[in-house]
Length: 95
Image (cartoon, rainbow, N blue to C red):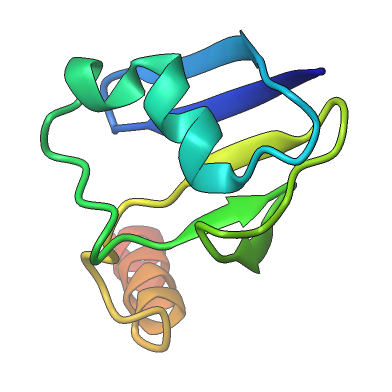
């Protein structure tokens, strides 16, 4: 079965397609894709993974056509981002 493995940095987005046997899990697809060699900073012990945007485990069994996603660590508190964006927008409109 074919599955995709996706990872993105601010500078680069990668989507790899791999052939996997039935019963393969998320971790199997990530390892077979070779993405860990392209992005050695990926740490599967700490970074979250998902399938089609839903959080998953490395042991989750994949289905045909699944899109495995590796998520980067958060660099900002999502609770403060809208406030910062709004404050920046107000400051820009006052000038």
